[in-house]
Image 1 (cartoon, rainbow, N blue to C red):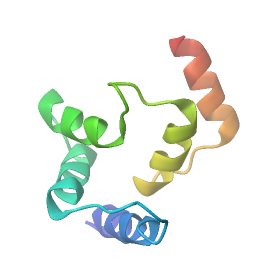
Image 2 (cartoon, rainbow, N blue to C red; image 1 turned 90 degrees about the horizontal axis):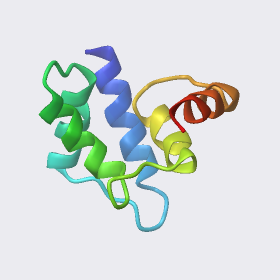
Image 3 (tube, helix red, strand yellow; image 1 turned 45 degrees about the vertical axis):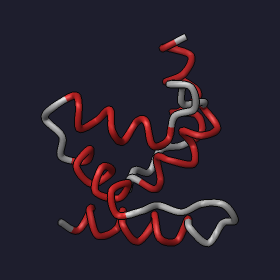
Image 4 (cartoon, helix red, strand yellow; image 1 turned 30 degrees about the vertical axis):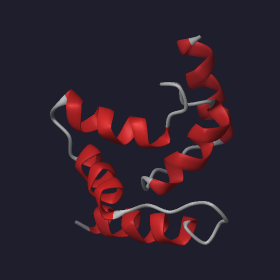
Length: 84
């Protein structure tokens, strides 16, 4: 539950940026994805952060900390290189 609370706090903090607003459904989808056992639960969160069904590396760098993960730029670069 601590991770969920931290994630909600980070999402609310991100809303201080112009044009960013997460409604209750968005936040619920993100929290469900943290404990998801079903692909549909993950997809709802993915769609929140994707543009044309793609999450760019720049967007990923922004989103990962919101989800409570501490990932370095090098780790993200390596992940995207592996996928591409």
